[in-house]
Image (tube, rainbow over all chains, first blue to last red; front, side, top):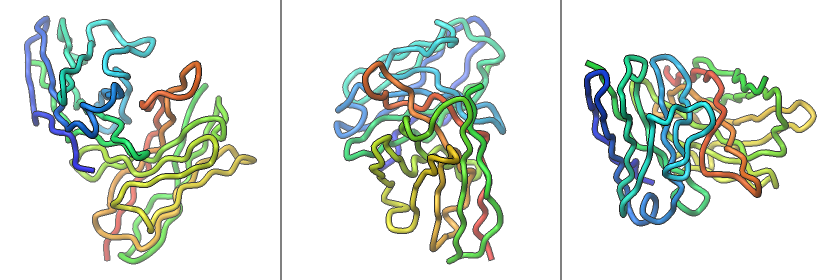
Length: 110
Length: 122
């Protein structure tokens, strides 16, 4: 149950797009279309942003999108806004009734 | 309003036990898949345990044999009994609900509590 690999930090200017990667193995990310993404502001609980690789829960802006290729999933945020500055975590079903998170990526809006 | 509220955290010595609770409102715990997820200070999220609506339970290797997840249907609460606590169990513990599908559940957590802090230290 090794954590998924995410970049420690990414940054972008307002209005730009950024992509956060999440790399796992064929036993988790590559083996299931069950990747989800969470946004966490300091001191707050995580918030679901994407599930099943590319589906958005109601209320999440369509600026947030997800994709997957092989063992790597990605979260893209377009039209960056100041309020998007937060930590982002990916999560994947890993089989055998277990789930694994990524180490988290700090997004800075310049 | 759909909500989860955790309680029971605190300071505990290594080797000690603690029981966390998570009170649900706006939905029925027993009809959902529920999990505990933790976050060590300054670190990322770590999945800890799940209880399915049918009652089956599963654990991360890091807590297997030491932690027990359960629910009280009459109180509509989720619990986590933590024994043989170690320093590395120090974290904010969140309870979370799995996103429901038309048939079954998605592998995603749509409702989270605010967390309860567990500190294991002598």
